[in-house]
Length: 183
Image 1 (cartoon, rainbow, N blue to C red):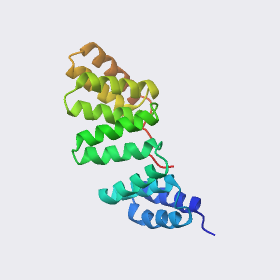
Image 2: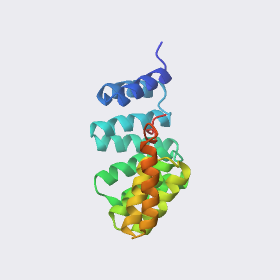
Image 3: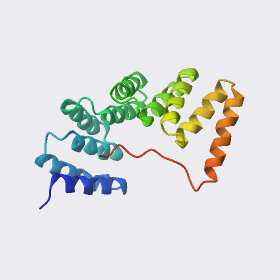
Image 4: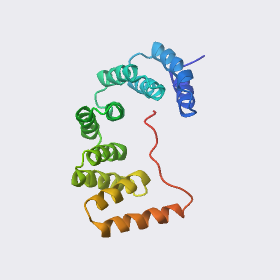
């Protein structure tokens, strides 16, 4: 017998295998069984986002938040969509909302930093990247971003230190990445 949990796990596997269109029906079927499960709504939204269906993804993320407004990953996912649509004020609000709910989320700190960097607010960007790296010291994207922010701020000594750390990582069989928002 299919359960919401098994359908969810299969949907996650398909989405991670770059088959989100095959995953979406599984998440919908799971939601018939557990319509009040915010993580199912979140995972459906992630699959929809990966297909490029931002409007449906936003509906799913909003539904997840209506059920559990503390779900930081839903706020983070909405921020990503707004960022991709170049709606930077809305993206910032979502990233801030994610951090209000979980200030130990390195992806939220990094994404907020990227937003500030794109806007030319390099000090704010640096602070965000530093927060991400303090949470996950080998977080490659945040280290790269922190190095670049330091360069923009003409803090070449710090930039060189982050470059050194990055080159050491390359010698250690790969980089640390942050997992997807699936649950």
